Image 1 (cartoon, one colour):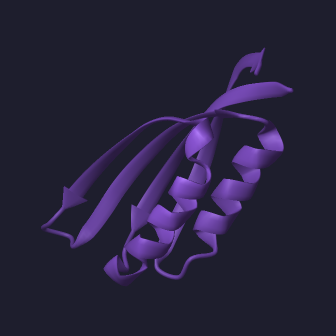
Image 2: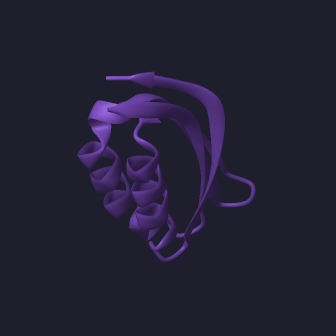
Length: 85
């Protein structure tokens, strides 16, 4: 299966949805390379970056599910690096 490396950038404006976000990330955990979270206390938001290596449709599905959570937005940047798993 061909995979791509991507970065999903997430802004959490509604802290009540963090549990749902963590459930999604756990569901896709086998593809996640790493995660970095930054609480921006002055603005009362959380900024999260997810590095992922997965098939393109899997990355798009995860990003779409995250973006559908109320109070959370997500954007994905794809690298040109591909491989197989």
